[in-house]
Image 1 (cartoon, helix red, strand yellow):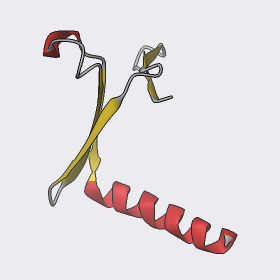
Image 2: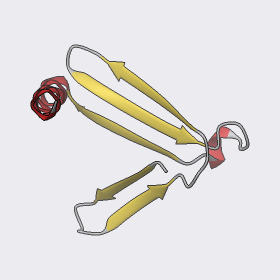
Image 3: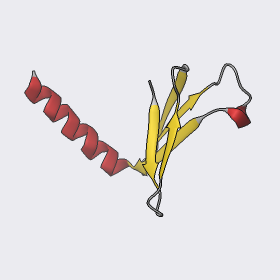
Length: 77
């Protein structure tokens, strides 16, 4: 079950719950940023009614995080 949760500046939590809907995931990267786009309901609803989440982060932070994850996974083997 895919979902996304964020906390806004006001401290409130916002959740996008995709339930059991099929999701489409796209990852786009440039030299500066990595953008991850997750969209549900793409087969059943028009674009303006689809649930989605987009996260855009600096590429160096994404690289550091995936490197840490890979090292942890290697230790667990």
